[in-house]
Amino acid sequence: MVRMTYTHTLRLLCQTRCLLCTLPLGGSGHGLRRPRSLCADCRTDWLGGHKAVRWRCQRCKVAVLGEGVPLQLDCTACRDRPLALTHLAVAFDYAAPVDSLVWRLKSLRQFRLAPFLAELMLEIVRTEAWALPADTWVVAIPSRRQALCKRGFNPAAELARYVALGLGLRWCPTVMALAQAEQFQAQKHRTQLQRWQYAQRAFQWCSTTTPKTLLVIDDVLTTGSTLHGAALCAQAQGVRQVYGLALARTPWLNN
Image 1 (spheres, rainbow, N blue to C red):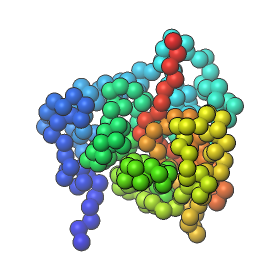
Image 2 (image 1 turned 135 degrees about the horizontal axis):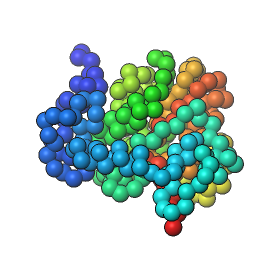
Image 3 (image 1 turned 120 degrees about the vertical axis):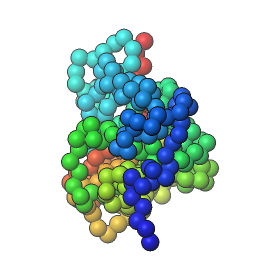
């Protein structure tokens, strides 16, 4: 059996047109360690947009878009309820035009996007210079049963397996699950306070062994409560470091 490496996977799925503007991708300037899914201009816009945000919380990575810019390094939410994560990184802010890529994966089931979106996440990991140990486990935030029945797949898991492959780490799809009582109400129907209360009991550990370091993958980060709950669950089992990595982060809008 031929072992499918991450680089080989990208070669097989190599894009010929930019996923955002649909213009042809050039033959140069797109190394395999960079997102082949975006043309040079869109890639510049993606990186530039992420870096050009006037203010971003150093803990939860929320961006403030608009006129008002806080003076502190962290947001009021993090000062009141800090995330139980060692480190957190997000690939982009959940705003046009790149938010359309999330919608196409989740709603249109365009699975071919997953390895390229994962590569955007990997580039942020490289930028953050995370020193993840070789024995780190990679898990995804699990989907509710109703969401799986409706969509047919877990978007976070689709991303996580490519992130694990790209980092050369162990992908553990069955380590973490939603607690039975938390299967029924979607996060989007909860208030912010309810999300944090839910996080305290949302997950259960399903493995008899525990790694020292865990990398938790999510698709869209809204308040951070879901990753916070996953971190609490892992830490209760003895995990020492919990890293969070999300594809997109919902920004705050100040008018």
